[in-house]
Length: 168
Image (tube, rainbow, N blue to C red; front, side):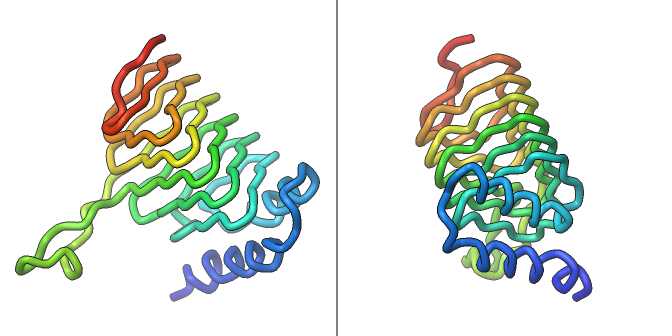
């Protein structure tokens, strides 16, 4: 319960309070600066667009100079590590956990938790989804509308559903 009071509620309050402000450089930086204390770890120069959602922010680690665009969704059920200088396009979803079945229903199955790591200087394109166990290398790019469920090597471009190697 203390985790919810210490991390979740204040972050949700700050994001709700600032969602009416426009997405310009000043307010994106202000939103990020106000949100920084509510993550497990967070570097300087965090930029957060409007309508971004964080679940369990106390388990999310964010490096310095990270930019998160409008409408992204981050789940901290497992371990989510975002290294320095990472950019997220609009409506990106990261989920380091997965549902399991119990008595023919996914509703009450015990979640399977894991890790997502996004390497320094990477770019995640708009409307992409990164799922349990994915790892993006340093300076890599995930193309828009992709689903990443594997490892991306350093400096590579991946895209598609599921994401596959395109070029270095």
